Length: 370
Image 1: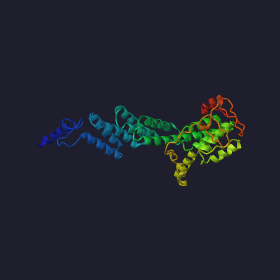
Image 2: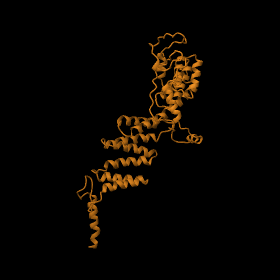
Image 3: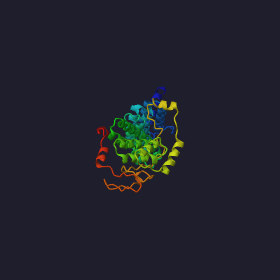
């Protein structure tokens, strides 16, 4: 009798884990005492291993669940947990594998209620690998695409506001990079390249340094002897960024060029005051620490969407004291002069020549000094 006991226990264990006892849920195995659910036990054990940093062990447990219980209700959760384990593990290799696993999850479970979470994590694998604005922007651009896909595919998700904020932070990094290149090209006197990169940065409506981009655009046009266009951009700084550090210099530029100074937009002024009140200033040590940080600084990214700045032809309203901006300017026919109002400056308002448009569409790297 004693010699038969080990064989009896082996038989019980074999029957238990091979699913020969019935009466449980689909994919669920009930042991003789009617309590244990092996697929659930495996799932919870995997979660415990991952929580304790035993990522490889946890993934083996989840994979065992997937292979042993193909009809288990924990299949979907185990598949997602494998991806999450790589995401939590982090590092370049971990994040790359996490993205692949999340993509597999979306393929195997296309109707899952966790698709939004998987897409968010895919975007975050790129977000976590973003480099500083003056370095390679590959990961930042990939994150931008993935967050945009999330917003388009899951507009009703409870995570959509979080995704929009991440997107603003990613675009802040991209815009800072474009602005840096524009300023560098300006110093090199590659004005075509400087204009193109600054024009790219200005497309990000929520960029916190929009005022500086407009000022650079004005400087470029001034160096190109396009006075009306330069006044257009300087005027936008004065009108829409009244508390900017570039407002005073833009105002001086308009006076120097003999161009009218636009009125301040009251909505923009109220918004600028609110921003100033809510601005968080870093300490000297905090700014110093940023120099050695590996991750890009996104602290200046807006916390809410802004209405886009609708740029029109590079024209200005020559009425003294009149506002500068595309919403208050009537566009004349291409190349046709506009009558100068009585008492205003003797400058014609004209649209950009076709050659200028062609120049702006050229690649920054292909531009030569103008």
